[in-house]
Length: 189
Length: 119
Ligand SMILES: Nc1nc2c(ncn2[C@@H]2O[C@H](COP(=O)(O)OP(=O)(O)OP(=O)(O)O)[C@@H](O)[C@H]2O)c(=O)[nH]1
Ligand SMILES: [Mg+2]
Image (cartoon, rainbow over all chains, first blue to last red; front, side, top):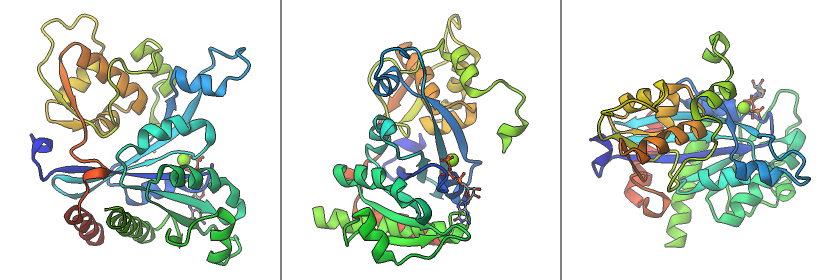
């Protein structure tokens, strides 16, 4: 009973951000399994959140969800979940976020505002998070301080550049997040 | 991507076939990394789909919900519906993840950091 032993542990890390910001790429870069990218059918609850008119009561909503896994050792796994950080998907985030070690908010300097809802979500729920600025080709390099201010990210939250296609870069992002989560747990203790 | 080679109908079509259009699990909510363990194979398989039986076979070794979804190549929400059916039938147990953020301690953070560095 592998999981029943007290030295076995599954840890959840979330990858959030706007559409096309590199979430799937980031999960793929470090996952040891072919990342499962599924179209999740949202619950009735979710459909209703979207439905203001009542006309489309039977319409189903789908959202892409990426899932990847990293085995750190036998009995210690990191599970990565990537999904769009959009208002209408928050109820799904609420479920995913329970018990999560922390979250990476991916930001694209060309569409910084897309990262804001996710930043806001993790701020409000006091979930440790960091901002990883995905440096797309052709995107102008931005002053980190400017990005921080634009996203209203507090000074203690890590904000780092990354290349979601590079395994080493993604590893560095995850290390930064875990260090930050540890720091937060110390402060909170 | 495997999905490109896959001649099967899209996941949503499959899902409706698999869960009868249900999107919510029955009973108490459980985490995507909750651990599923098969208690026993069914005496009577009537009412169980091939996907239910496949999930039971995977979980003979305790397995997370997310990993079962990967093995069955089904969306997580669908996987949860199937697993909730199996729980209702008394065929699997579903236990909360071994630890949640609240109980992560200094030693675990250090172990995760060491593990990540060694990748
Ligand atoms: N130059 C550059 N391109 C990247 C980077 N990360 C992702 N891309 C590219 O950007 C495109 C979108 O990346 P995805 O990983 O599919 O983005 P996503 O967030 O999963 O997108 P959705 O699931 O549609 O919301 C792909 O063509 C990637 O190859 C990066 O760090 N640098
Ligand atoms: Mg994607």
